Each structure stands twice: as structure tokens, then as C-alpha cells.
Length: 503
Image 1: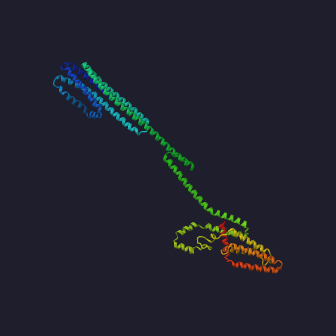
Image 2: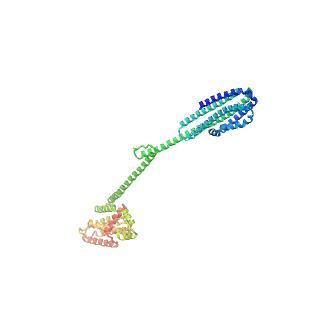
Image 3: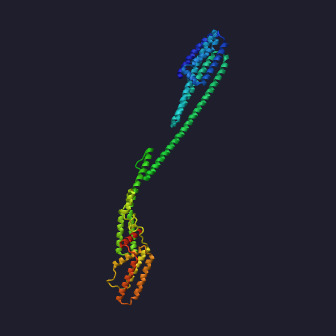
């Protein structure tokens, strides 16, 4: 572009020189003063047009693209030259003026083209700035800003060259004319230079503002990029730390995730598998605990019963029967599943439940409740005081029997003594007889036996034995008649059931 402008400039300069030579030949044909006025008007007209062009660059660009700017200059010149078309001098001056205006128009067109180029380049700079706002690469922004500075410098150089060319043309025109007009022309040039200087100052201020905006945008982008990178780094570190903590706590880390999605998925997978594994172990432990629960209860019960046997000196035969009964109760309770029975009863209608209470189950023989059996009835109780009383009574009976000599046919063996003890136990569990009454009866029998033994010591052996046995049998019958007997086996089972619950 610069080479073409220089060629055009040289051609215009040569043409202008030829026109000057013709003008000097015809100089004596017109008045110098009229020419001076005309030239001053031309200069002022040129300055006005230049200011309009600088203020309205966008409209001038459109006019240049449409080819309307030259027509505007020609129309304005035609209107101003109508007053000078009367004589030939004015026509010659118009020719010279047209030549000068043509050169000025060429320079103006070059300036306008340069300004349009500057506008386009500035628009490109603005577009680049807008594109750079969302970019994260700071190095690209700096490279683009350097390119924009280079373009601005080149545009300024082109504008300066065009201004220098226009000044050279004006100087050559002024050299060919009278020196008296130089002062006015210099004033005009100074005014023109001042205006151009002001315009250049405004342009430089705009460029500085644009550079400041670019630097501010770059700083914001750099800060946002740093903040975003730090935030992303922190989030990734948090996720990986949670994954490693969960993995080391739960299992051995065999898989190392790479992305954030894989880290989150692996963390939840570890937690889920750990929950399933823990639930399975818990259920297995609960099943084993439920199986061993009854066995532990039975073992602890056997230990308590054995301690009771040793403390109370229970006979071996009675111990064997008690242990067999406890084993039977344990086997029955182990086979019973109360949960299944409850589920079955829930599904049955109300009428069938009533029939079941009447026919399906006899219930407890002691209290009549259908929800439990006789062996686990809560009304069966055997406290330690009653046990102690029974033991003392049996011991007293043996002492009384050893106080006198008995014949072998009438001597009670161990089986008969055991039966008597069972009868005494029935009396103890009779609700109509209180504990104090039993104690009083035992004391009375002890006193009676002691008195009778002292009275009959001096008597004959046979008479003493017969009388004592008769009296003993009589008094025993009186005691047994006063007590309501129950079934011996039922009472014995009651004792064993009470021992089981108590132990």
C-alpha cells in the first residue's frame, strides 16, 4: 500500500510541476490579488473539509466506499467557482485550483484510507480484547497485545508520512507563489497543525485507555485462572483424601482411580461393600448367639442345681430324678419355636383362636392359663425358708426315731421315709396351711416325742414299743387328716419346676 501511494505521489508531483510551468506563462493574464483571495478560500475550504472528515470518520468511510466523497468536493468547488467564470483569468485560476484541489483530494483520500485502516485495525483490537476476556492463556493475550501495538505504530507511521506528503505539496505550491502570502499560509498551517496535534493527542489517549483496559482484563483473567486452578486442585485433593481414608480403613487398595468420577464411585462402592459385609457378619453372629443362648442357660442352671445339692445334702436318687427332669424340660424347650406358633396364631381367625384355647391346649394344670404349661407356671415357688423348714423337720423326725429301739419288721426303710417326706412337702405347698402352723406342729411333735421317750424308758421293752408305735401312728394320722393331699407326682413336678425357675 505504501509503494502505491508513493508512485501516485510522484506522478501527481510531476503533473503538478507541468501545471506550474503553464501557470507561470499565463501569469500576466490575471490579477494576483484575486488569485491570492482564491487561494486563501481554497485553504480554508480544505481545512474545514479536513475537520469534518476527522469528526465523522464513519460517514466518510461509507462515502469513500460508495464513491461519493469526490462528488461532494466537486459540487462544492463548482458552487464556489461560479463567481469567477466571467473572464479567462478566472478560468486559468480554476484550472490551477483544480490541479491543487486534485492533489489535496489525493492526499485527503490517502489520509481517509489510512484512518479507515486505523479504524479497522482498532476494531480488530477490540474484537481481540473481547475474545481474550474469556481465554485462560495469558501468553496469547500478551502476544496479541504486542501485535496490536505493532499495528498501531505502523498506522501512526503511515499517517505521519501522509501528513508530510501533504505538507511538501503545500510548500511547493507556496514556493511557486508570491512571498507575501507565506505569512497567512503559515498561520493556516499552524492552525492545521494544532488541530492535527489535538486529534493525535485524543488518539493517543484512546490508545492508552485501550491498553489500560487490556492490561486490566489480563490481570483479571490471570487472577481468575489462578483461583480456578487452586479451587480445582483443592477439590481434587479433598476427593482423593476421602478415597484413601475410606480405602485404608475398610480394605486393601487394589485399584487406583484416575478421574474425579472414578474416585467418587470407588469411595461409595467401598462403603457399600463394607456395609453388606458387616451386615452379613452381624446376622451370622446373631444366629450363633441365639443357638448357644439356650445351651448357656441350661449349663448355668445345672451349675446352680449342683450347688444346691451340695449345700442341702440332697440324696443321690433325688438328685438323679431332678437332673433327668431338667434335661427333659431343656429338650422340650429347645424343640419349641414360639415365634412360629405366634405367626400361625396371627393368621387364624378369632373363632379358631377361641376353639384353640378350649380344645387345642389344656393349659397349666395349676393355674389354668393356656399360654404356658405346668412346668413353667409362675405360681410355683419354693423359697429358702420353706426348704430349711422341710430339712429341719426331716432331721427332727430321724432324731425322734433314733430315740427308741424299734423292731425290725416295724423299722421304716429309706423308701418309706422318702414317701413321708413327699407328703410333708405337699403339706408345705398347700395354700390353706401357713408356714407358722407347720412350724408349730413340728415343735409339738418334737416335744411330744421327747416326753413320751422319758416316760417309757423304765417300762418294759415290748410294751414301750407297742405303745409308742400306736401313739405315733395315731398322731401321724391326725396330722395327715388335717391336710388336703394332692397328687404326689404333681407336687414333685411342681417342686422341680419351681427349682428350674428359681435357679
